Image (cartoon, rainbow over all chains, first blue to last red):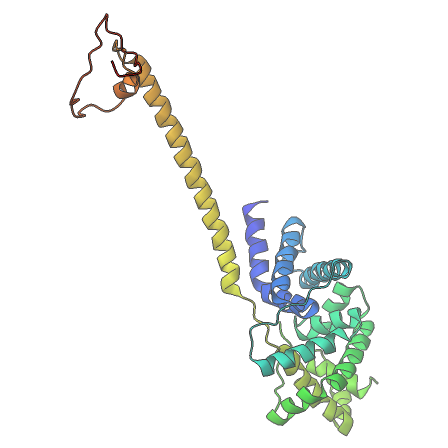
Length: 174
Length: 137
């Protein structure tokens, strides 16, 4: 690997590490596993040839890799005996909410979950999600709508609490 | 025309929407309610306590670096020890050999000079039987 390429991959890693980690964290549900998978994603990125820096498909390509890593992990996990993960060290009330969100996300179909998290957690555009998940933009819209409707119902309590506090027209995480 | 919910969702997602369609969509009570719910849902999900332990990540990297440094130091010290040992052996071999029956003289020869003189010297005399016998005689 040349020096310029190493620098490029490192810059790419720094720019998207948090987004990829958060996305994987929501998919697998465990922070330590998500950290390992994030490393795995960037290991694969460093071995492959990512699109050029100015290529708009670059981020979508990265999340295609992340999605594949997540799917492989979930497939492997199904084959192994299940272990009960220890809860993260957060306050009990927050922990309860975290569990509720995790359960609500788990109830979505795997593809809807990926689409939703790529949008809400990683901040990908519809076009990028479509490229990463090999879907049409219309299919992305449709999956997002369905995921949101389901989550709107399953997380009605926390949503109502947030409504009471007030909301902000921020952007999705990126 | 797109569904009012889709227009609101596209707006929330930072996608470009038709102004007239948006105006129409925002005229719908359900769509406005949906807009608020989407924003609240985003805060609920994005606000889930998920923190990338950057320090631990760096620690992992610095830990790797530490092991590399430790491995390099071990290699250097081993190599230095080997070279020093080689030189000492060569010096011992090339130095004049002292005739002595006492064991360990070769080792003493290779020691640095300036050591204290021996406090007692055992002389081996011919004709004396040094084998021990029962009774001590």
